[in-house]
Length: 112
Length: 112
Image 1 (cartoon, rainbow over the protein chains, first blue to last red):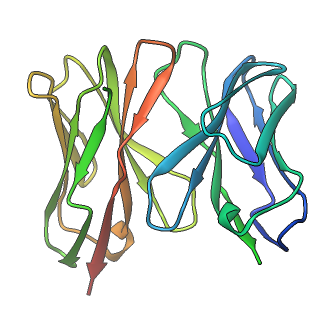
Image 2: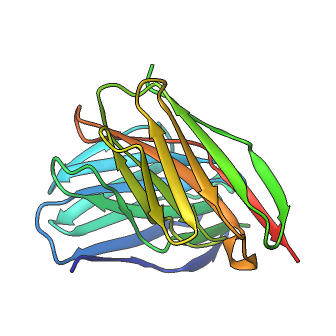
């Protein structure tokens, strides 16, 4: 069966510091991968999605970036965090052409 | 424009009572509709999936309905429990380009 792992689960970072959140999917090949952000009490906002290695589409312009160095690995990064980057980040995957999206456990980021 | 709207935004009910959450969508072409449950600080987990031809589907105390003509879905929770306290998110998928459209969720609080 397929599983998705996301880490770290919680992170407290000072303003201006770098960020790296990592996500891996097991049990499937060539999945679509997604990064979402969820502000407190708000809906899910799509940040990036990828349909293959090295292929990244950005939905919202910001100081975050994403990379897909391997087929089942998706990384969310920032060179300098802002206070507004605080939130709950979710990695997700779906099959190519699939109609269901599956989520990781999420990562709480607090920028102080 | 493809949109998913949920109501109410939040709901407080007594333990043991029933409740119904609503989801209206304008997504086209329609593939399926899923209801997810998201516990605080966790990733969303799928409860039910509704395809175009299905009118109702149950999963334990959860019953989802779909009216594809009016583009409305509901999630009915029977005999609520404290553990039902969570955010419930309606997600509609489209055949076009692996698109997933998210509602902003209904925050349900079950009190003893």
